[in-house]
Amino acid sequence: MTIQKTKRKHPVHNIIFKENQPVIVFLTVCTKDRKKWLGEDRVHKSLREIWTNASGWLVGKYIIMPDHLHLFAFPGELEISLNNWVKYWKSQYSKTHKISSHRWQTDYWDTQLRTSEHYEEKWEYMRYNPVRHGFVSSPENWPYQGEIHKLLW
Image (cartoon, rainbow, N blue to C red; front, side, top):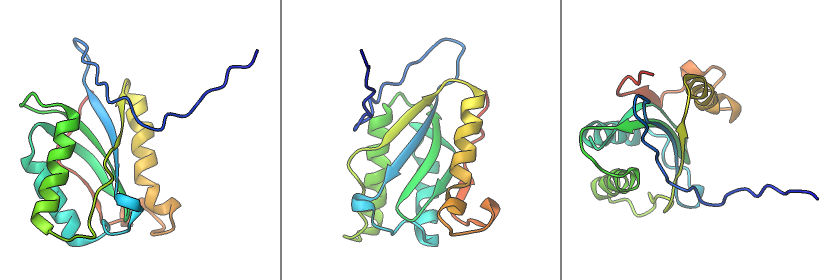
């Protein structure tokens, strides 16, 4: 008998809180229809400002690609679900910019990280994304990345 693995089409969005274990989530958010409008200075600046002020979850390292972004997030001082936090900052961006072509995909993909090794693997994947796509020759040359809060294991 063969067991087939099926790929999930939608993430579960189930964050598990365990005593004495940090909660760090690797998040991927895409633009609607993968339109390429994210890779701009003004978008980067605006998202940094929104993430800095949206304290329900705190953003660690992030990278913004033309049609999607990746970030690490961990719970902030407010008790708010990850889903509500993502909806909040997406809506704040949309309200601020009012550019009809700048639309977000409805859902997002999240993975709760279990170990510091998993975190390092995801970070390497994120930072080399612009290199794999041919935008830059070295990850350090990609301008749309940063870190807002330090995440510690």
